[in-house]
Image: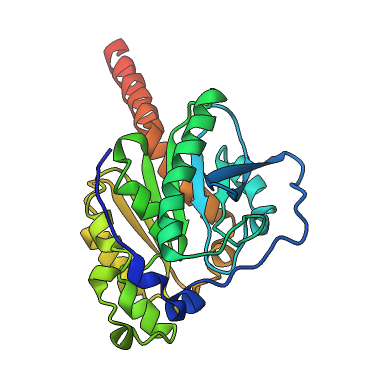
Length: 285
């Protein structure tokens, strides 16, 4: 575990929070068949809602931080698609979103990510789920995912960043925040570039060519700065910030499955089996 202290106090100003967070509550809190609800206590009287769509006990586990304006219930029809590809989806929320308590803030979102990770990791261990743990963040969730990647590299098998941002100030400016007037510099931001530069395990970055919120260049910056030797960058033609999954269809899940297969060494094992078969045939001749 890497120990670091990042401060986010300047991001907790009212103008920033109003632009950065758009929470909505869960209308129907009943989990769909096969899914289970799970609450993580992040502090006294504040619990973060999560919904687990679990595949087999040996299958990879995707700890997923969703985008702004989304809630874990939005993934009720998506979780089964992960399961069909032998992937478990563990969707978690933020304060004030879905069934979660509290009020969202940048600093608490980062603190909560640590509590969520430790709790989920403990649950997986207690349930004897031995598959690799992959952390994934979409859009705003990329901040939570990279916070964990920079801290718990030894406990994480890989990271997936979808529609993620590299720099905080340009994003806030796009959202209408006058960062200069508020005295916010990049050093006060989420430091996604600095964090991804500390993570050396397999990394997959997915980004839309026509992302109208976070330019493709932002994802390219993350890719360049990523310390991983095994890193992939997938640019999705014809998609925008919110239509990557729609545009890709089934291949969205197939790509993530291929990524986790590499983590598990499945391609290498198949390759070695073919090699051995070829060698055996050569010897028999």
